[in-house]
Length: 602
Figure 1: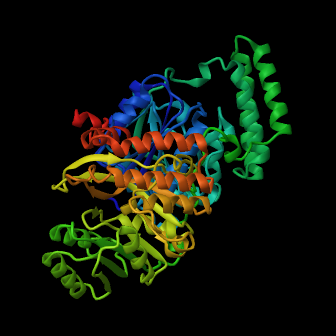
Figure 2 (figure 1 turned 180 degrees about the vertical axis):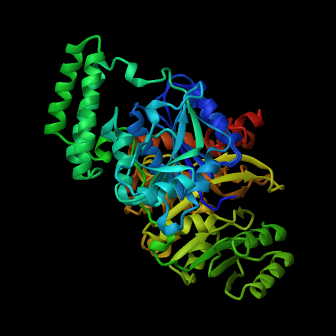
């Protein structure tokens, strides 16, 4: 299998049947992507419910927009999420009416990997067929003009041709090129967003159209040139003017070449229209706006709709790899075999192992755990074990352990959980590029760690994390990696027993810490028989009320949010354990089939 990490990007709007067909084809292919990011553009036809029900053999991130931003906005958002959260080498872009063939991805990768890494194409376009098998004229990439005979022959030997631009119907984009040249422009909604973006990437880098990577495009008509364009001519004219006058995508000679072709196309559109006066008025509006305005920044265009994550993070080579510590507390209630399993999962099983393991023994432990800690010190000479004769609680143990961590970057781990092998490889680049704290989604397990009981998603972006933090903790504590200095400057874990992590996250967020979560579950969290029992009781109610008081006093919440939290979160601490379990899993977890985990409890 190819070593390239591929993240598929799919944009959908009110076409559930076609969306199903597209995703089913992706899953059934001979080579599947490592992740899929789907942006729903405000669908009202059941598409979102279908997406939420999915359980795929690879990572799935769903981004729901309340407003239809078109392909321009949808692909911009989807690509930003893919780059920020899934670390792709290649982005595979497609609409919901695109149906990949069994070998679409594998053939594109074959072409991609026929070039050395430093000469890889900026993009590869698939060959696009209509439903009846004919080549689709709407999605024919523009051949690059003026190339030498030698370059033509080289491409032909690879069953490809060099192109200058392409459509978003099965387009493979180099993640490095996208980071360097930027995302599509949201304001190019309704047309020419793909033309501008692909031409910008291909301006000074190789771009290819493959003859063997093939998809079917299920449009209603075969040739868009037969469709009466009507009022939409406004977008065609405005966006083309923007591209020729505002975009760096085309060179001067190319502007003349494509400008002439555009004028011929416009004339044809007007002549075919059944309402030429309407089309001409729309074109005149587009001409004026194209000449006297410019597209907004993507952040401005998406204001009030969606906040883009920090997609410009570089690959690890942009920052020197930093050594890091793992902080793992152990107490009497832990099981020696699970302690050994947790330690192995964050050391010898990691694709990027830590330089140091710091274990805090919080009070007396069983003879088997004590023996396991001694063995760990022998197996891993870089291990530090801090032993306390009396238990002081988790917050005290973590503060003491953090103080002796040798490295600026510290990863948390609990003694009964399992970190997945790629956890630190995926999280550390964020810390190395300037983030203060990064967590991830997780999977719940029982005694059998191979059986996933439920999936716990997380808010991903800084704004989403901050917005939801007034009601619930935005991070899964054992999944986080953070900067030691940031945590110490915020005051450490402190004395908030039972809710010490939530209180720490709030202080970090309101101090301006740069944070994120990864959609991919990187930790398997063991749900023991007493997990939900420990969340309730009088002591936890007291801790909850103390926390809400501190949040109100600090200005993190107002009186109404305080009252809501005391009622809901405080009430949660007092209900019977069985009801508490159903309520939590119903609200915050999903089962492997995508449904609410609460259903399993009923």
